[in-house]
Image (cartoon, rainbow, N blue to C red; front, side, top):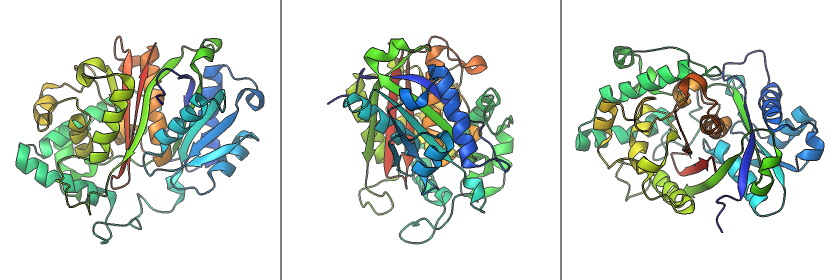
Length: 381
């Protein structure tokens, strides 16, 4: 069964991504969801919303958090898939609508990591070969093999950071509105070689919301509907224990992208897709994802970075709102935030970062070590 063109997005909303020391999770949920309500023309959610799917990495109380915040006594289901949680909430909502269980469903992703008392992701996650490690540590395992085989280096990663910082200055709700230079990135404090501070995503608080309905009902809503061409999820073996893993790719991305392209009928993603939001938790993750998503051949990223292919004015703009790098990464919200940005791009409502004439948009959201990936493809008709 394919979801293609059975579901439409009719409302989106996003909170400010920031270190919200004076706000709680419920405040951010309300901010994002009520913006989505306004976008969709929802005046009576208790009547117009049939169910809710919510996602949070750090809260075990998702259904309670959301139902209490929204005063919405509806079926509320928690969804979890590490950093891919945000896309998974939207995917669950789409499946419920496409299956005919509900007509209109709210998906909301949120997280408030700044309330956890630590400055970044906890090292309590299982590490590499059972040795404690941070996400920067296990994602950096790609770098040395890739650099040795294809000749890329820290300068290429720095150019990705510069691009995403620039794009973030154009997004009103982004966290880091700071232009940087290649030299700034190269000279920054080292986190886990070769990742310096500017190679790592900014972890923030935030929430994002998406309202989906049956495609045949979409015209009943005031905002331009955006149609779900594909939304898929795939798992792969843990790369740190997989004997067949070469650390030149993330397999989960390759698998999820192949499924999404089949569903959407795409055979030339570089030329068919107009705008991309991808999971740049670290600059190397963005670099390898250009290739894992099939936009360019394996090993070609260095040349495309140098030529500006993925900049706002390039052939295939990537992370138009700054990505995780500068917009911020409240883990459970990130995938939903990507979808919000793609909806704005496809509606022509992205302001200074607008990609002219965008008709088809992809988002890519990975989680785990990474062991999971969710990909969405949205279109204007």
